[in-house]
Length: 351
Image (cartoon, rainbow, N blue to C red; front, side, top):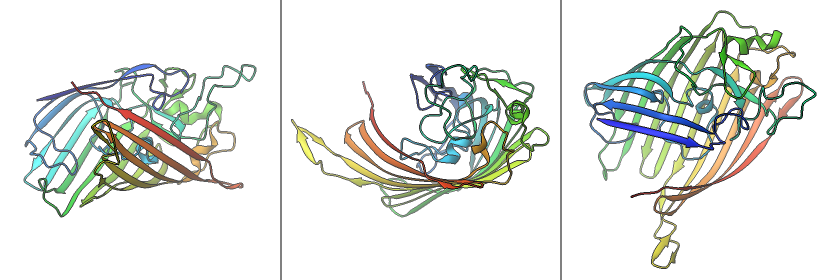
């Protein structure tokens, strides 16, 4: 049996709107009966496990070598959801997953670290939002209550793995194919904003997108590969939001180099490991938004390139430095190139 509770306080990276969303929220709270093996982790998995509570989709990649997110990791399944999840091993090499729960509401946010402030300005006479709106894309926002609005999201997956016990060397691979489906609600109230999610978001305050129906689905393949110090994590996705289709992928390549300690502070070595990272994200939208829609950037084709370095300073202390460049392909304008520079210090505490 395993259980986890994760509480976030003043988490600007995940608040949307950034200035007015909850300052305290439960990110995860679940209990699991049975063993579950994560991608590229040598562990025995039960023939059947059952998980209940607020937890990530089984399709969410478990490793992110940078503090920022790839565009698809933001767009699909970024936040946890109330659910019941089952799965298990199918022999030594294969496994299955299934889940049913409350689907996260459809909303939009900026692609950078901060989501921006959408729907926080009461009128054109009030002052501008603290963080402005940025260039938002559609994404699955966090669930704020247990109301399913009469609709449940379900998902299934089938995977195969080839993983070796440490310290064995060689090629290790984990591949997972998955599919999720739910029906969009007429509207969903979101904390901190006057905007409404799901179908009301697509209606665009009277200037709707060319959507049809209310079915929302995602199909994708996750691939995790490790060879010696190198690791590749990739996700290929096709999403259909009421006949508004987009597709693309995230791919992140990193390498782990162990260091003997660059120098000493007292008797403590500083600089234990270093991990350079390169990530590419692509979103192609197969629909066009009318020029009157409130957030025109939702139909722009997008390329995002991230490079970074994560340094293990001390035990449970690391420093991440990263740079992001965007290629936003804007119809009738050309390609814009906003960028972002981010430095993050993480400190873990042990008893």
